[in-house]
Length: 550
Image (cartoon, rainbow, N blue to C red; front, side, top):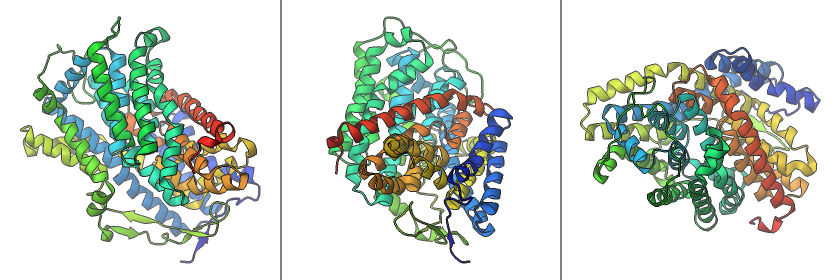
């Protein structure tokens, strides 16, 4: 099969080409939000529209469309669905062994106030999980944790999506920044520094934003010292590590530092009025009713044992994510080019300086994945805690069986994303935002937001739009480092509304069927926070250009 060149204006009129390119995503949300169908039906509908448009409007060869769809299925199952399965498997094993109860009681021992529990779990612990592995693990694990503490499942789903924002730019041991440096050719440390100057203000206010999303202003003011301590400690370390250290450990170090500072602070301070969850703390697995329990105190050894499943899994995620370890766990024979697609699609100017071939590699390195690291840590923990292997495997089978509809939804959604990527539909959408002239620093930030909403990952958005940001910035006279970093920083606010994240949150909290409601609950937050990032980028572009690293 010969090469196929992408066409960024197939209808000869860019506004119409943009509208057509948006139809797959609009279809997905129309079926989900208006027709109120199951999420896998909505995803399948959007994918069918994407396939038809790629074939009829963009004139992409049918075999290329089929190959890109299959590549999306493989990516979705291994990179996203597997993390969900592993995370909920971890949670269920922790419940089965009784250790999850100890974990909940250790958190409640620090504070029984649900506002502070939210910050400790969704913000601090969630950021640590994002830094070690990324993917869906922070939302899945933190959401399960909050339900165990007595949070209503729907509330747990939305709050964890909100919390999993500012850390995303350095998720998976800094992978998004490394991808951005790779596609743009800009210095990694400069991009790291710039992201570390854009996002800390958002990190500082995120605990306040989270708490206010759950309770009123009066209840939020009651705990403002703790919100300030958690937000400022995280933001300060995020700024320091990204500007003066390296890329991979930004989230991990900031999360651990914030968590330790919060633990120390809660030893000497507590709110005048404690607000507890009305339902108490649940003991059953996800999907079972919560049962109130009496709070017990535990020794340090018992607490460490209780946290051991999560500690071991987090350790393995971190180790597997280190570049050298990940390389050692990956085998070239398991990286196979997709037939009829690999290096046959060519991106063309203005997206790239000269025609460039798009790689399409199916990476089947199962051992190197975060989901495998979580599962390995879970099985090891189960054995160390005395859970028989046959019982552990039975729990795993039950977990997979319950997740089948969600796994289908993720497969269709990522298939949709890969068809729009290789057919150039998402690039057409992105190019429309580059036509904004002096407002480009703001709308370029929203381009990153759009990229994550479409691809589901900040690294994916950086791979898709990073070079476009660089080229457009240079053409308009803006800093390429600023706008490339803005793509990644704006993208983190799109993480809460991308279809894959919605599915992860609904699945982990047993809210399957309520994806539309979850999307509606977080959409305004996503837009407002992305706009705040855009305003910060505007300040750097026009007011503080001297603060932009070279």
